[in-house]
Length: 162
Image (cartoon, rainbow, N blue to C red):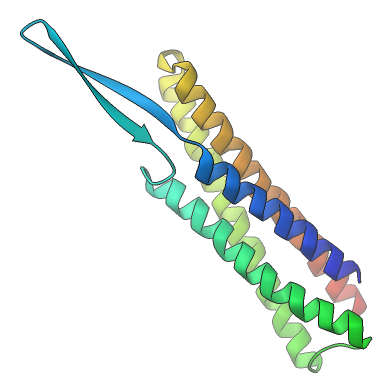
């Protein structure tokens, strides 16, 4: 039952991370000066603009899918009152949880590293749109790291119950 609860919490955190990342967009205006006339070009900046954003979103989506599958396995085990599969299957699930934890940690750390570097390099030239964009992305990466912590708790529960 504890594993099911932690998996549901992990799914909620990962879903929140995906929503924050996917809905955060900001508009950037590039002014081109040609013969003293301003021609504004509008560029939308979102999670698709850099590989790090794509990686972090992919990690969160993979985590959501994996957690959804294992929530159903955990719910069946709770309803039946016994484990599904043998000891080998349980150890396989623990191994997969460790892989998921490493993936979530690498995604969150990569995103936070990008945010910190961009804020350090362009700190004084950031406008409010940039700040909002990077703050939202920062929060999303923090949620990924929180999901990694929940996964560690799940691993500890699983190992101690085997």
